[in-house]
Amino acid sequence: MVYPQSPPVTQTPAQSEDLVTLTSFVPGPEQSAQRQLFGLDTPALIKLFGELGEKPYRGKQLAEALYRQRVTHLDEITTLPKALRDKLAAAGWEVGRPRIAESFKSIDGTERYLVQGVGPIGSTQTVETVWMPEGDDGAEYSSDLSDSEDEGLAEGRSAPTPGGWKRATICVSSQIGCAVNCQFCLTAKLGMQRNLTPGEIAGQVVAVLERHKVELNKSRVNLVFMGMGEPFLNYDNFMSAVRILMDEVGIAAPRMTVSTSGIVPGILRFAEEKVRPKLAISLNAPNDAVRESIMPINRKWNIAAVLDAVRTIPFKTRERVTFEYVMLGGVTDQPEHAEEVIKLVRRANLPAMINLIAWNPGPGIAYNSPSADSVSRFQKQLMAAGIQTYIRRPRGRDIYAACGQLKRTTEATPLAS
Ligand code: SF4
Image (cartoon, rainbow, N blue to C red; front, side, top):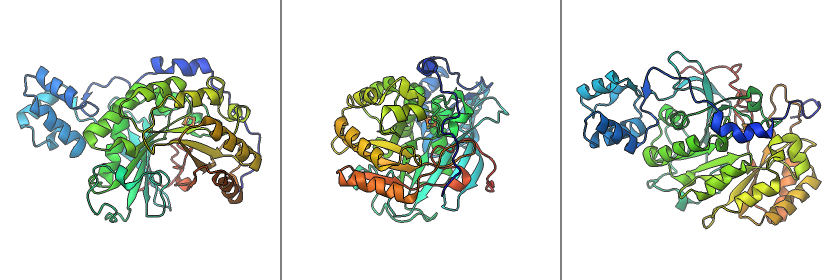
């Protein structure tokens, strides 16, 4: 598909100083009169019951109800006596799990959701989450996972579900809006609004799992933290959400991938984590000059600085870092760009693979999608150089669900919930 040519860069680049300080001053949700249980892990729930003069095992029962049974109201927690549920409610506690407020379905089966958070009662602020069901045709993010990494899956795991999918990927947001200001991304147009809490991040996943009645011991579900926002500019909340998803919900870390635009302090902290998702770097350009023109963050941390930080990660056997490469027609998709990428990857000396993403168009963004031929030629050049390279199928373009398109667009036809 070819889109009209227009000048490439139209937005004011974000100031790098703003980016560095974001982690400390970005507000969370406005205060709610109620207090949310969803987002507290088992130790925190045990502590809460201790403060209420109750036994510790009640905390475990509550965690089971919140994260495995996926309850949405205190009344549904039948393992707790009614008197105890009333006591929680009287102390101002509610379940407070984010809920799907609106849904849009693509012709390719992808669903995009506007998820309502746990802000003040009546708040209409939403964040985007995407469900991508896949047949057995080479899913982009599971293609690099061997079956042995499917921790905890039962026998017969590849049998199709009642919904007809064999595996699925959920794309999760970490912030409302984004400050990184990548010039090709619709989310950037929202500006930075606020960080999501751990409960709001993990809650997107649980709400979607519940919508599709996913049984995690029978289905292959991957998570990609590639929705709205830069996870490493909301590092603590993002990692708390990851721990809830691992320890409480039951999704193994190798099933999760986090993508960063190259926030070096975040990468260095990530390298220190004992258990962590896999890492993807939004490279998107063959050199610093091009990257700076499409990703202002490159002025703060250039490609060499990002790669130095990635090298501090103790990669496991067979683990690889993924370089995401958004292909912009005429800007990053030419044969000479592929040659530069080959040299860059070789110099990086990292266990790496590349995901090519044909740019997804959005209103008001002045780039061209690359031709199918240029994407295929680019892949062949990299593969011929021995670099494992995948082409990521665009998912849900017609409902603004594809990569870089998440802007809470409501023009697509909503699904009946
Ligand atoms: S591509 Fe990611 S990091 Fe860049 S502006 Fe969009 S949401 Fe932010």
